[in-house]
Image (tube, rainbow, N blue to C red; front, side, top):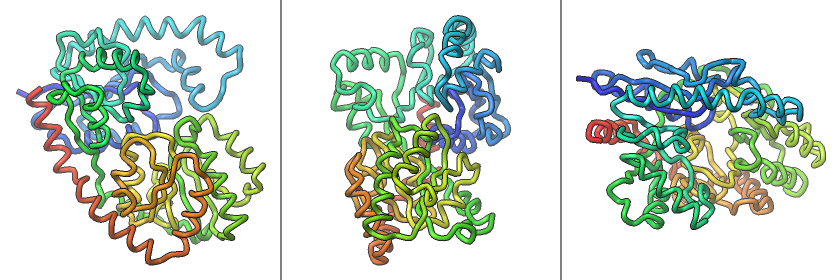
Length: 391
């Protein structure tokens, strides 16, 4: 008899969590499992990846009303006027909460195993009582609790409601075991995977981008300063233009609430004509493939999928050595260059060095090939399916 597995996300946007989940859903054996994707809140106009959900996977919303979710969705893109915030707080928040709690408990009870893929149920773990459940952790534990002792205890209590905890890189698992040494039987590390052939096929399915705009550097990710730190990247790029004399433009793929602030910063730095904000791209691989290098400036991560994608397309990488996953993906500097978080001076000098050193580029690409071997779907799916069958 097939097991029913429900994968939960709070929202379904266009980030790394959604991308990796789609990969998993496409490869899990449908002869063994009945798969359902549960999304807590509908995000009108922002669910660009939803049409990629594989056939045979049911999609269900807990709160699916367009009207109830409208202001919540808009808040992800921009700051709401005070009047809208008041309407949201007075009329929608409590009603959404009522519907969510009413529907969520029933939904959880229908599954054999609940997989909290987007860490969406951590506020509602009381509904997991008596259920078999798994949580995926996508971020550094140190980021989640800021090394706060009280928050550590709360996190322990929360995780104890789940049958198993999956971390997506070894560094993250080590963090858990440092804080919770008795959790060894509860925590397992399972890498995300990527379909290298599919990525390369998408990348080569359209004309070359550089024919339109010339040589460029690329950055990919949500326009969210609190995590992605595009301010450091833009300052580094301005320094590269002014001090190191590079000719490349900077292309940024992604959208988010900090877009206007970043556009204004470009104006202040005098680089508006050299920075191209391209918004969300359904096929970012064609842009990555034609770039000179990919720069990743995050303050914290889990296991950034875009770095694995750049490896697959043999594009050299410069990234901040943030928690977690980045140093692991770049082999501590053998498969890409690492710079301190927030250090735009070092980032600028390393960008200029990598752009002008063919031998260094080749060395990074060679290192990337060994990294890719860890991210085959067979290893990931085998481990996950074994876990779902035994939990």
